[in-house]
Length: 83
Image (tube, rainbow, N blue to C red; front, side):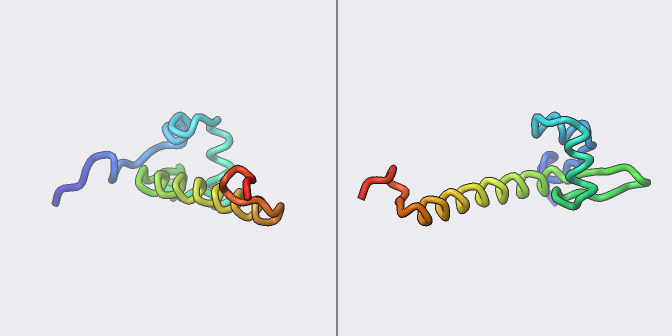
């Protein structure tokens, strides 16, 4: 069984906050609201690095889709508004 360390790595709130460049309080709020993949071990939040990386990708895709929808609503295309 060959899994890389980072794929199976479990992170703390502090580590996730450092990784995402936000405060620990922000991570706690996201976890408590179930807006970021997390689980509790003995009452303490923990995060899978693989799950966090997937979540980041989903967030990025959501932003791109939102931009495309905004452009379509304005009658613009993804070519900078040229038609």
